[in-house]
Each structure stands twice: as C-alpha cells, then as structure tokens.
Image (cartoon, rainbow, N blue to C red):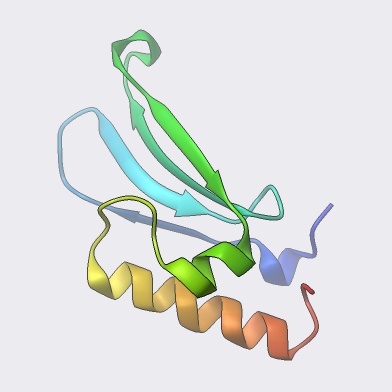
Amino acid sequence: MIPPELQRVWTWGNEPNVETGVHTFENCLTWYRQVTPDWAGSAARQQTFEEFLKEGAPVDAPQDIVESVRVFLEEAHQKGLWH
C-alpha cells in the first residue's frame, strides 16, 4: 500500500470514449489508454519511478504532464515518500 500523499493521476486528451493518463496507485507509474467499451483496445505500461526520472516517459505524453510527473516524484522523494 502506498501512502495517500503518493497517490496521483494525470489525464490528457479529448478523444470520445478514451481516457489517456498515468497514475501512481501501484507504487510505480502506470501509463494507460482506457477505451470504452473495454474490448476496443485498452493498453497499459508500468514504469518505476527511478526509470522515469532517468529516462523520461515511455509513451507519447504532453510535455506539461511529463514535467508535472517529474516535479511530483522529485518532491515526493525528497519528503521520503519513496526510495
């Protein structure tokens, strides 16, 4: 279980019936594309916090989202929320 302070989600895009985003709920970054209905091609990819800070986003994401994730993870690391 991760602390509530480390639980965060970012979403982007405006395609109908599609949610694209990244979240921290599984103690890592989960980059996802959720399509409704579910059988229509949803996908997800996990990445450790460390990998993200070293390599950046493994998917095409808006730069402002990538920067927000980076700042959030750096601040959370400084507060000792993850090691």
